[in-house]
Image 1 (cartoon, rainbow, N blue to C red):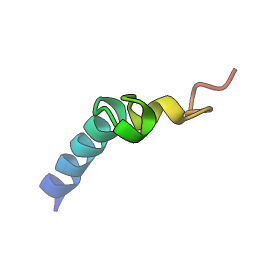
Image 2 (spheres, rainbow, N blue to C red; image 1 turned 30 degrees about the horizontal axis):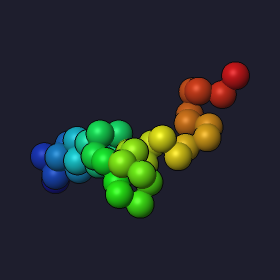
Image 3 (cartoon, rainbow, N blue to C red; image 1 turned 45 degrees about the vertical axis):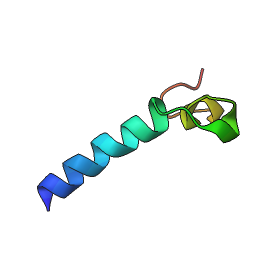
Length: 41
């Protein structure tokens, strides 16, 4: 189970931060986040 959890975390990071999405004009989903945790100033 720990291996699955670690693999999922890696997959989600890649999917949300590095994979280009055509629906977002080639940008990753994280580019749509207005106030990511720790980024609010």
